[in-house]
Length: 429
Image 1 (cartoon, one colour):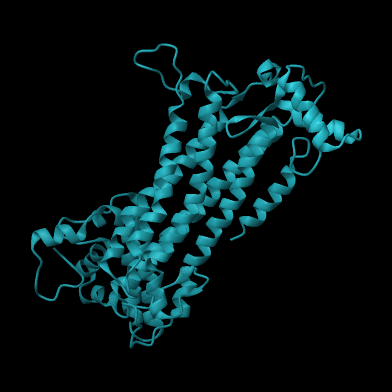
Image 2: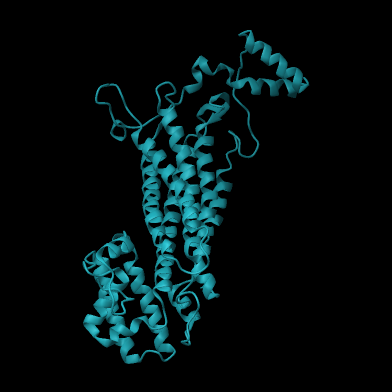
């Protein structure tokens, strides 16, 4: 197998298979970023005199050709090549001879892989930002559209106080604001350039790390070369934590929808084409999409813990343990995209019931409203509470009118404009 580290000896097939693991598949996502990192690296090498202008002018078009193959989907990792880094260098060497071998001067595969991963994760986070903003806008629109339609609120899964669809949809919109802050925090952690840290202890070449930082679009270098390598694992953990927050929001929304779709509640409805049936019960309309969103979000939530367990107890510096980070994080990224997109798709088609509170089941939903009315008329709160409680127990409680909630964030004052402003600010990264 062609390896970048080969010094004239070879591993057994069993060792190669075990150590390569899933990299040959997972690293396909990193191929385009490897070319981007390599182009920045050789431009810097030329600027400090470690590569001739002639060599640079040959290498850049050759890398562009490889990039075009990658973008077309036709990039192939050959059977006897260890990874995409080896494949790209091999293609350059085949085409350019010794000039292709010069591309690795001044870097290690450690900082090469780390810059690829950071560039990849930056793009992933930007995609999550876009998808989160789209879902946020949809939820806000649904909140405004259905703001006057009441539904029961629950505590302890027991009927509690009046809520509204405006409040319900709006709650999940605002929850996404907090998730956006987490995504932005992860982006800021990742947005630092490790290239030039080599194997974690710098390099005797006079590298210009500020130049590669600018070329690659990072906010700053990871200045300390040891700290740069220590960001492996920490970067993935931060992303896992951020998507975990998104997953927690989507998981709770999915659980609500499963409950509200149940005929015993019947608060919301989806077209038959978005539900599934039973092999034995012809009446069933199952919330399989929401159940799978809920389940997949639970898997996403486990990602950060897996990374914690993998990365703890390791001394500083690179360890092959870190290879498994891709096995853990990359599938979770895909699941998060799927869950965000399917949540949007389902909510685009949601229908809400407008007469929920006409059912006598919800007669006691307004006990707090009545207590508060009596307090406003001068009855001490504890006396009003006791009076209404006795009326409920004796089956005499009755409430006329509508709830009058006017404070910020209540049924009658959703503050969606203020929440939109919060999201706009949270998305500035």
